Amino acid sequence: MSIRKPVRLIVSYLFAAAIFYFLARSLLLNWQKIASAGLHFHYLLLSAGVGMFLISSLVGVWIMQYLFRRTGHPLGFWQLYKVISISQLAKYVPGTLWQFVLRFRYLQGAVSDHSFFVVTVLENVVTFLAGFAVAAAIGFQDLPGAARWLAFGVAAGSLMVVLMPSIFYFFFNFAYRLVKRGENPPYVRLTRAVLFNSFLASVVNWVIKGIGCYLAVVSLVTLPHDLLWRMVAVYATSVVAGYVLLVFPGGLGIREGVMIIFLQKFVGFEVATFIAVVARAWAIFSEVLSAGLSYIIRSQVKD
Image (cartoon, rainbow, N blue to C red; front, side, top):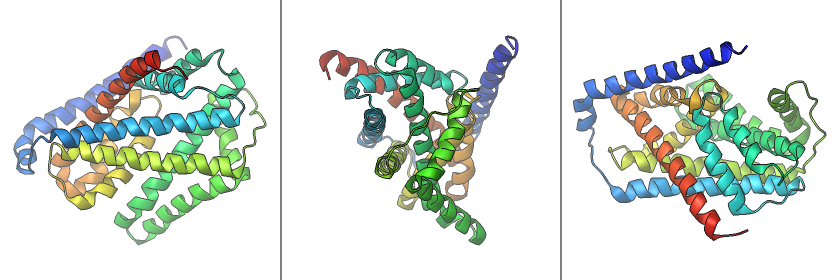
């Protein structure tokens, strides 16, 4: 077992490195085609894109704080902002669970172990359901006949899961067993209103972040305006896919591949590759900036 983990870590990084090698190679070989799409630099658009990411981070903190409060552990907003912002950077270590390990360490003493795992699972289930709903509800327009109905079913099903707690807690119990192997899930029951409020806030969060991604991209290359909502759907799809495949650090390679697959029919393979790389750079820069701001704000503001 001790040998498998280092091997898995090396393989995951090699895979991510290989993906980015081919992405970089594709950009260099096709730079003339990308440039012909209308390269430029708009500082205000880029700033707006980063700003949307930071707003999204605050919405994510509110969701976590809301769930902790509803499970009996009120936490300070800026305290939680610092914990979440810093732990986000740990996802670039293979296995997304590292960011949750770091959160657990920071929050020890502030919340019970039981409450931490319950809220972590609740927040992730709600986030995934909201991501599926956003991707399906917006993306169905580009799908062929039968697939449209499937996408509509996914969007409606995600909402139904939240509005029917008995179904929601089936997914909660499944996710809890994945996180806490060998342990039976605790009996947790939040009201339908709490679940719906968390879901709705998460949907808004996905939309904000998707719009931010679009603004960051159009600050560098010209894109059609009708691609905005498709970018929101594709961004949600790519991030969910990256998180599902935990072995790849921060979804490196997976998110980019998903974005290229879904966007190339609208802008071509070359520009889609450029968009995927810019989206990753925007996300990493914004995450590092958010972590830095959390240190400054937390040192100046006490909850």
